[in-house]
Image 1 (cartoon, helix red, strand yellow):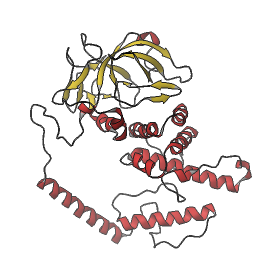
Image 2: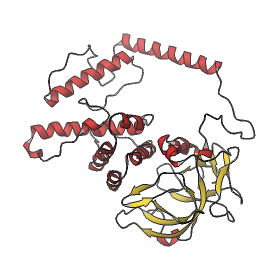
Image 3: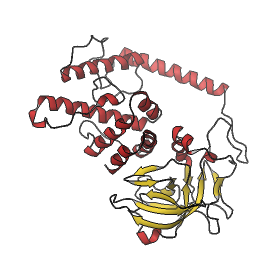
Image 4: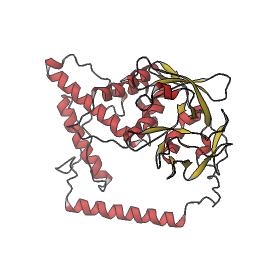
Amino acid sequence: MSVADSTRQGTSDDASVLIGQLNDYLSSRSFLVPSSAPTVADLDLYLAIVGKLSGDSLESSVNGFTNTRRWLEQCGATLDELKIVAAKNAVYSKVPAADVSKGLSTKPRPLPLFFYGEEDESVVAAVAAAAATTAVSKAGGAKPVKAAAAPSSAGGGGLSDEQKKAAADKKAAKNAAKAAKKKDNPPKAHGGDGAAAAADEVNISALDIRVGKIIKAWEHESAEKLYCEEIDVGEDKPRHIASGLRPFYKLDEMQNRTVLVLCNLKPMNLVGFPSHGMVLCASNADHTAVEFAVPPEGAKIGERVTFEGYDGEPEAQNKVAKKKIFQTLAPDLKTDENGMVNWKGAKSVTSAGQCKAVNGMANAQVA
């Protein structure tokens, strides 16, 4: 809910960046509906996001982020259900009406439907239309035009044998066509020396990762998981950066620490604290263990960390945010079996050697 407060105080660009961060967070988490509906915190953050982004801008920001999309749709559907309850039950008359028209759809929505992934598009559309008809009826709205007939077991993936066979045949044909296209147009491989990707591909050189030193750190006054830091990254004055490291490090362990800092991120307001950058850390899959990613001893404060074979200049922070560059590259930024920081196998490079997880955490995500 503190993130929701920050989102309300921030800009639409901040909300767009948050959508990508949510996608990474949700990638290892799932929920069952309706038994595990979104929490109040989920709904609070949802309302904060759709308060900053709506219509085409929201659709554009969510495009490609399937985990965030399912979460947004579920939150919106839950609010629709709450509005119906509020309208029917005076006990809940004080529930605020959410302006879900700012969400991904302006039509009444049922809870998300389940499909096996093999259905024909016309079948999916028919099932969705039938479910939407039910949602409008529940909401007491005008009776919609009758949709095309749908399978009687809508939402459960219940297709007739003929429909299942047709869907399977169509999927097989599509996969065969895809395989043939891949065979005719094989991907261009990098050279054995780690040559950079083609010019039209985004790669790790787009990120401005620098050696930094924490000059001062203190606890955020209202966010229990955040430290506030002043970090020297070789600029005229230290950067202010907030990091969610209080569960993992004591305050005295933060002081005078040499770290890696991602610098070409747009400034964000995190629970009232202006944060400009990100301290990079290695973490395990469920984020229960976190440790600093650090440069080797002797690396110079402010020097840029590069990766073997990728020597391009970093992108401007506006482009990094707009094109979701960090979210695109981050899944391949990891430690190897020895705890050394790599991107797609390319070693991190400083004037003093390779960067690593401070305690040698192996095969960990770095972000």
